[in-house]
Amino acid sequence: MAAESATQRLGRLLQLVPWLVNRQGIDIEQAAAEFGVSRAQIESDLELLFMCGTPGHMPDDLIEAEWEQGRVFLRNADTIARPLRLGVDEALALIVGLRTLADVPGLGDRDAVDRALAKLVEATGDASAASANVQVRLADLPADLLTDLRSAVRDHRRVHLRYLVASRDETTERDVDPMRVLSIDGHWYLEGWCHRAQDQRLFRLDRVEAWQVLDLDGTPPPDAAPRDVASFNAEVFTSGPEDLLVTLELQPHAAWVADYYPVESVRVMPGGSVRVTLRTADLTWLRQLVWRLSGAAEVIEPEQLRQQVAGGARDALSAYVT
Image 1 (cartoon, one colour):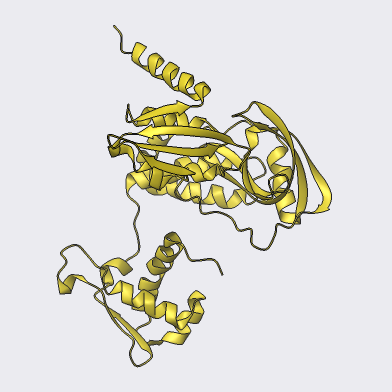
Image 2 (cartoon, rainbow, N blue to C red):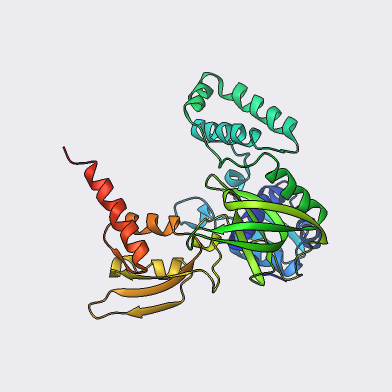
């Protein structure tokens, strides 16, 4: 069984607290069954809740949990157990997100989106007008691409892609067992098992030049599972040996990059800088990372990326010239 992520556990804890507060004395086995975990996991969650509470760090600020007799009692958790209320900014963000979702081709339950959107607009009143000033643009795709890929995921059909590898300006042919279609930072992706790479890959749909749903079983291998992309970073672009090899030299205060992103090697240089190598199928995020580090990162190779970073920096500086 795959290890539980911190995001998954946090989600369960946020549900567990109000559920237990409203069911004082419930049998711990019943609680475990309700949340689909073992008794040992519930006990571990309760031990963690002992260290949670409101700011102040005093005993009265922390949650009290008791389950020694097989019955669970949770006290001093009323604040956390109260229903969550959206602020205006949060409500507006949801309105913008729902309007964007409503424009997605092939959306299944559009009525549910429309109902939720209407309720939010009504609840926020005049404040909802501000949401009209924000627009989210998703990548333009052929009208039937999303529909075909979603059908392939649902029906477990293999798909054939003619796919552009942007970093090498090379078109490749790939057979993929699809796992899911998702949108991240304004781009659509297909996640699936790539038979060419013999590994999981994430394909950006605006780089799909042609596609065909095959009359072949497209069930991924049993050990292939959707990746956690809640925290978007370079891991979205799952690297492989065919991807571009990049070398960066990082100043000490930017050495965190080696811990945050998947790298192939790390070498401490004289003077304290850190030289890292990594592979990527997409240079866009890497250029943005180097610019964001404001001189704390230098591209050693490839030369193509050095020139792109330097050119972008010159263009940005020229905008400040009066």
